[in-house]
Length: 479
View 1 (cartoon, rainbow, N blue to C red):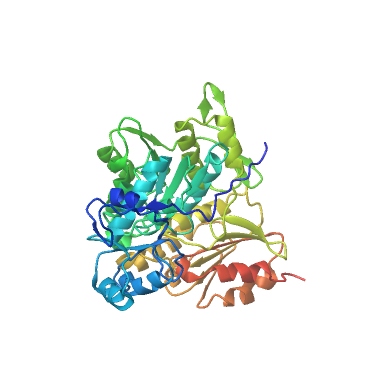
View 2: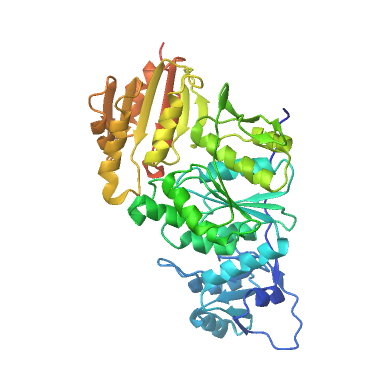
C-alpha cells in the first residue's frame, strides 16, 4: 500500500468586501460610509489588534476578562480598513482624536457577528462538513478523517484546540476557497455549546466518538453528557445526513435516536487483525468484497475512531481502496497514543495529552494486549484527572480498583488526586508507588528500563506528564 502525504494549506485568510459583511450581518448599523460612495475595501477578519495587517477588518471580541474594544485605536493605527464593534465608546474617542473617518459596522454582539461571518464564508465555499465531538478521541478522529479525505479531496481541518465558540469560526475563516471537505472538531463545556457550534457549521456527517465521564463536573450525569453531545445531531439533514457513534454505549444510543430520525450507524467492529503496532479492521464488506484497513495506531478506542473516519468517507462517495490509502497515511500525534522507543530500548506509550476515567481504562487495556506490546515488564504511570467535580475522589478510587487485578508490573501515580488511584489498587500483586512530583519518576525507574520494558504515561493536560515522557525517553537505563 502506498502512503499519501496529507497537507493543509497555510497562511490563507478569507477576504471580505464591505458588501460581503453587510450581507453577512444584515442587522448591523453602518457608519463612515455615505450612500453612493464606492468602496473597494477588501480584507480578512482579525480579532487581535496586535497582529492586524494593513487592509484587514478588526472585529472587537468581548469576554469576561477582556474587551477588544479597548484596542480599536491600535487596530486603526496599524492599518485596519474598518471596525466591527458592539460598543462605540472607544471608537468615538479614537475618531475624535484622529479627526479621520473610518468604516464601522456596529452589531449587538460581536461574537455572534464573528460566527455569522464564518457561516457566510462556509456557505460561499460550500464544502461537505464532517463535525466531530465526544468525551475523548475527538482530535484523533479529526486527524484520521483529514488523512482519509486528503487522499482524494482538498481538506481543511480544525487546528490545535480551535474547537470552541471562537476557535470554530477562526478555523472556518482560514478555510481556502477550494476546500472540498471541512473537518471540524467541536468541544463541549456545558449544555447548549455543541448546539451553538453546530449551528455555525451545519454538518453533513456528525461523529460522536463517545459520551463518557469527562466533564461530569459540569453536567452531573452520563445522561446529561449524552444529551449535550447529541445536540450535534439536531443540525443534521434528516434525509441526507449521517450520524456515526464510535462507542455505542446504551445511554448515548438512546439519546441519539430520540434526537435524530435519520441514518444512524453504530460502530460494529467485529474482528481485529494484528500487524505489528497496527491493526486491520476486517469486518467491512464493500460491494460484496472485504477491504482491509490498516492504521498506525493501537487499541480498540483508536479502531473506533478509525471506523468513524472510514464510514464518513464511504458516505461521501470515496472508494474503499482510496479510504484505505488515506487511513494508512495517518500517524498518531504527540501525547495521544504515539508509541516511542527510548534510548535504553524501552517502549514508551505517550498518552500525556489528556485523560478521563474511560480513556484511562482504554489505554491500559491496550498496553496489556500482548499481541501489540509483548514486553514482559509493564509499568503504568498515571497522573491526576481533571474536571470530575464532586466525583473526583470516587472516580480516581474506582479506577484504582479496576487496576487491582490487571497483569502489570508496577503502578506509579503522580500528583494530588491520583493518590486515590493508588489507594484503590491496594491489594494488587504488583508494586504501587505514589509520587508528588513528575521529576521523581525518572529517578525511581529510569535506571531499570530496557528493551523488555513497556511504560504507559497518561494524565490530564494540567498534570504536565509530557515532562515524564521526555525524562524517560533520555534515561540511560540498565548498564
